[in-house]
Length: 211
Ligand code: IPE
Ligand code: IPE
Ligand code: MG
Image 1 (cartoon, rainbow, N blue to C red):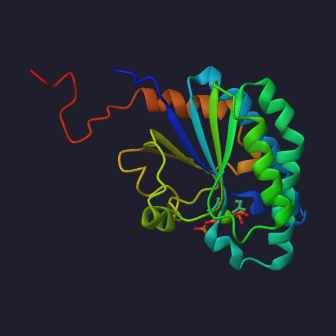
Image 2: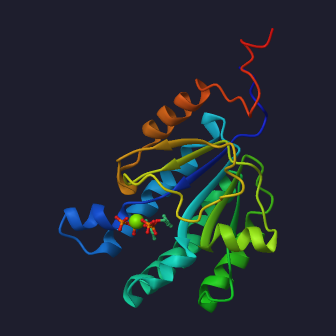
């Protein structure tokens, strides 16, 4: 099987709320636990050959959630950026936040700009986190990313929820019932192994069939 030099994995990180509710915890506790899973993914990704990782953290439709949950999430994003930058620089990760900025709290926008600058020299992994992101809006404004190779969704649903619609034209899809806070580096490795065994034909014939 041919292996291109770039390997773009995108993840719809779903199931934080249900993870918390099942434990009798507030939904915000699920989001906090979800941040731990993000840390695990970022640490594990480069050794799996992943060169770009795009994580769906907050969709433009998520503004319709209760204000308290939205506020908790915005605070969590800003805190993650502040706390994580040094570690990301040490791991040579370049972090950018994609999506609209004009509806985000000023403190978060500042944290985004700072994190962007601080990690701009990273070369091991292109980490993108989507906040106030809508794929339809991105297509309309022409702000497109590299093609997605492998798209993972946790939390049991099998839908795209307006994430990277254009870039996933030929993405391999991988769904798991695991709630995002329970997602491990091991499961990511399993998804990558599964991906590598697939026959991507892009409308042509598989290499074995081409005679
Ligand atoms: C994904 O988890 C994170 C965000 C959308 C912010 P959810 O919050 O959607 O968790 P569930 O789907 O309700 O369990
Ligand atoms: C998709 O999850 C958005 C993120 C994971 C950030 P949702 O929980 O918002 O998606 P739906 O509502 O189940 O489609
Ligand atoms: Mg959800």
